[in-house]
Length: 609
Ligand code: GLC
Image (cartoon, rainbow, N blue to C red; front, side, top):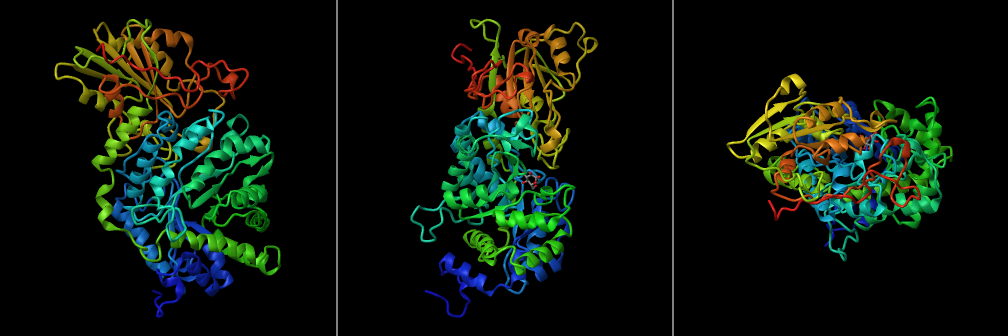
């Protein structure tokens, strides 16, 4: 029954589309343009929220209320901003977004799940959905309603600095893993009166499929580079995962910095408007990437008015910008509309889409944090889920030099085990980029269990564990060890800082492994966002080799499998090359000569042990 006393847009009993159009009809051009703006939290002001009424605020990679801020601090910050937004003339709530790409990775103490490349090794869509549910709770606990996830890039060259943000080189594996969208957003019955595939409550977040489209297919894996392919190839490889995201009602799509056949995605009307919104029927809104418009001009940010013209007319609905750009954005966009360069219908389409998402997300009825969620951050159940994901993501690439004498599982009651390597006792390395800070970093950056700590938990009381981060011939001396577990791998990185031309094992990992393995039967754990070059003599020298990717905070999952509590299940989500000179090299290529092919993964014979 309609509530006569409320304007329709404030009446939750009214259909979403009616509320959208009622509110739109009440907005000035300046208020509409403001809804199309997302600003970084560091530049938020009462003027921007209560005065201009910008549509959204974000915390970029590593941006937080304070060092190691608690969920409560985050929630207070977001709710205070919301109060200011609701004090604006029409009281439109803001959407607050963050990159929760493997758990709520900006939040100290949150559960950090394995990065996407690891999850791709599980091929387990239901696991992805459950991780989405847990992530949504830990994001909402901090007051945030929008996660810029999942990245559904189909990576085709591991030299790309965002390789680990992709689930796989295989579009079907990526498509399977996009079930995370239903976990993040929740799902409504098909015949729900809202007509929308989901109704995010206060335990769900708005998801964001990114980066549309072809971000993983750039030449040589150059970040923000150019993807050269036919439209049929773009559809068959890079666009297919978006279909599954749209089927689940994904609310937002982020445009890619990259280009397709030389045309930047941020100004590509054909792909954004004709294909994504037209042919595929996307009903949510398209958000730019961080300073995505600025990158349309060289030098970056010059000729901003033309960048606005080309991107908004291409179909970008919300624009992410950094400090103080928004006054100029408002001035320029209003000029472009009033001068007839951008039709008012384009502005109305963008704002309708933004308002639709806010209404469907329930923001008008429940704009503030559900404080009962505060205790879910880093809770036991979520950490157990993350540990399950670690176990299922490990890929066994070698197990003994003789099939009849497998090396794994290790004996829990072995007399003395050496645990070595820079990645054996380092939460920061386990988590990789997009963790607490944008690029991540080595060290005890958040709460979790390292591979060493997991090993100590797994073995019997009589077993002696010796840890050496940087073992040497001198330090090993003539000590007798049953086994050695050597964890090596990459430094942390994100985006452009991860682009490489060579993919050798960093930190002298080869020599450490060779030195240890020449003395002690050794299993190597590779902690990396992608395959690395494994020299044949190194592979011959070790007894076993495990790809652990970037497992996140629950490093105990590695020991769960090494000592046989669980078997290996992982299968390579990406081709493991012999040499970077072979790249790009993907399953299905004519010249396909990998060290380990896509899908490769051994199991242990646990019956014997
Ligand atoms: C970054 C990334 C994008 C992220 C955005 C906001 O540059 O390209 O994935 O969501 O900025 O942090």
